[in-house]
Structure formats: C-alpha cells, structure tokens
Length: 356
Figure 1 (spheres, rainbow, N blue to C red):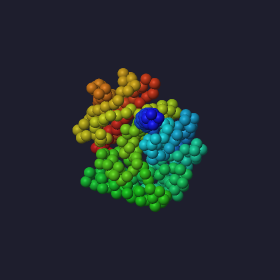
Figure 2: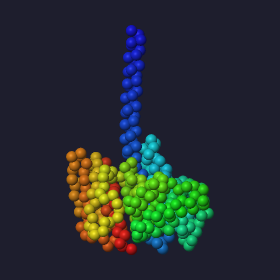
Figure 3: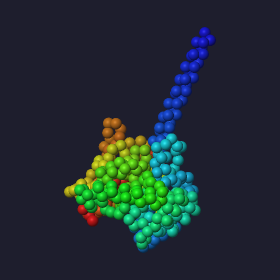
C-alpha cells in the first residue's frame, strides 16, 4: 500500500514538473517572438557639406543620450541578431550602423560612442579605404579593437542593379569575396554582416549574400527587425539632417514592428512597365487600430484597401495614385497604432534601375 502511494506521488510530481516546463516553454516562446531590434543608419558626422547623408554632432549626441537614459541596450548588428535568436531576457535593443567609413566617423562619432560606452557596426567599401575622405586601415583596425564591428559593403560600392544580369551576380559575389579578404587581412577578423550599397538588391543578390554565410544584411527600407524579419534584408531607419531631430529619433526608437505574414511582391525591383505598383501585405491585426492606419508614398498619394480574411488576418493593398516611375527609389510606408498607443512601422522600397 505504501509503495502504491509512493508511485502515485511520483507520478503527480512528474505531471506538475511537465506542466511547469510546458508553461515555461510557452512563455519563453512568447518572449522570443516579442523581441525586436531598432536599427539606425548613419553616414557622415559633423560634415555639413553633405546634408543628405550628414548628421550634426549635437543631434548625434542627443540620440546617444536618449538611448542611454531610456533603457536601451546598444549592440552591434551581429550581437543583436544573436539576441533575437536566443533565450535572453526581453529588453529594448538598438543598433547603430554606419555605411562607407568616412573620416568624420573616426574623428567625430567615435569619441562620442566611447563617451557613452556604445558599440556600433561600420560597413566598409574597401576600394576607397585610405583615399580622400575615407578612413585608412590603421583607423579601421583601431576602432575594431575598441568594439566597433566591421561589416562588408562590397569593394566598389557600385550600383549593381545598373549592370546587365549576365555580369551583375558574378561581379557582386566577386566584390564581396574581395572585401572579405581585405578586411580579414587588415583587421584580423572575418565580417559577419553585410550592407547593400544604396540599399539596392534583387532576390538573386540576396541569395548570394545568404549563401556566403552572413548572419544579417542591412537594407535601406525603414522599419523594425523582429523574429519574422528576413535577416538578409534588415530594415534600418536612415538618419540625416532632415530626419535627425530628437523628437523624430525618439519616435522611431520607440516604434514597434508591423508583423508581416506575407508580402507581394517580395522583390524591391519595380517591374518594367509598372508606374503605380500594387503592394499587398497580410498582417496579424492583434491589438492594432486599423482604422487609424496611415500610408505614405514619396511623391504620391496612397490608396489603401483592407480585407479581413477567414483566419482573422488582414490583407492590405497599397497603391500610388500617381506614377512613381520617374524616381530611382520610392518608399511605401505604413504606420498604425495599437491599443497601448505604440506605433507599428513597415516600409517597402521600390527601385527603378532605369533611372540612373
């Protein structure tokens, strides 16, 4: 009889333990699915000759101070991807990325990053290293040793979509390999992350980057990285003199991802003959206030249609009301608030290679 009671007790303990593990597993999965990373893109610092790619040092320090005082953990891009994939505790994560490796980053931004104790990810196009306005290998190695991640930005920083397909992909891959080799030889570390020049890519270019083993690749459409993001096409919020005011930065830093179930088309390249292309996305509405959805299209008004599907997802179709074919790059951007007052953000970049 005693043995029988002991066996029952053991079974009860095991059941409780299994239930506890299942609950913890579900909680871990939910927490992992809620992880997000907001990523910013910079080029020049304190160099007013180029306002479209420059940010003032006053504004940049204001950005760093905001992140510091509002509880953000600032990581390199590869470390942020590690965080997304891990079982680490949920936290506010930001990434500071810098493209091209201009001298103004080394002279003006690095001292401020050191002041706040923040890392960053610097994408280098190796053809220009040490020339005119660009950092040399000694400076690149030094910042790497100080905690700056060095990423691959191709050798020539060319408009690869301008090249015929017969040579585009071979040239693109060759340049990436060349840059990997040069960076590895000069700083002693193999880049784990990549950024597309001008944020321009097509599906085959993206596949090349993935097949070469990069952990993540930065694009130039705005938005927030989350578990459902295509890591070979990570969104980044661009910062320049027109968009760097602290209130705008803070709004983007606190923005949430608009989680996409499906997107048509997948490619950024504007189909030939399409002047007012449709973008169709399917989302999980959750607590979103879809009646307050906003759509923005550069150089055009935005027409939107909403369809509620049988699985409770919502399909949104966006269309420009006038031609966008005369622009090289055009963003379709959606923002929508949730019941807690948080804004969710998504954008799709259209690229027209016919515009040189």
